[in-house]
Length: 148
Image (cartoon, rainbow, N blue to C red; front, side):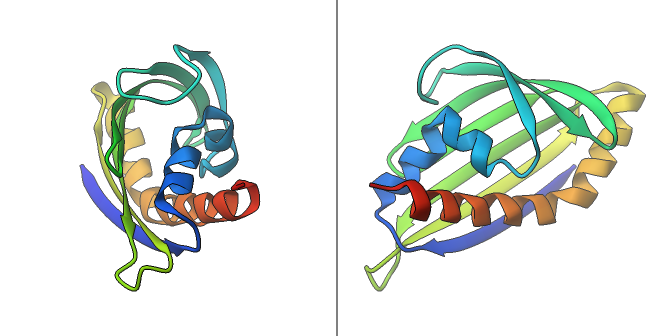
């Protein structure tokens, strides 16, 4: 099991950052790995929403069931269940100087069970720091390009 953090200052309002985090189409743009959205239970990623996504991890196609755990008051949290269990929490805060938004990301991984889960969990832990930083860099780009 690994735990990782990253943060980024974004020249935008917190509401615009949260809008990007909760928009399924935006999530496809900013996700650090390509994935296919196979099922989505709602139009926005709100608490209680579920989805199924498929992509590649460590050279293998994997499917994850995703549940949005929290989506309000500057917090967006989700849990993805698959060969690896991934818990992600994004905190959206006003920059202390008041001219930007700080996005903080916390990611925790654990094995989904079995030999495949242990192997994939090890691979996920090796890739997680770079992928987490890539995600928040892409979120910043997405917000700055698409915010209206």
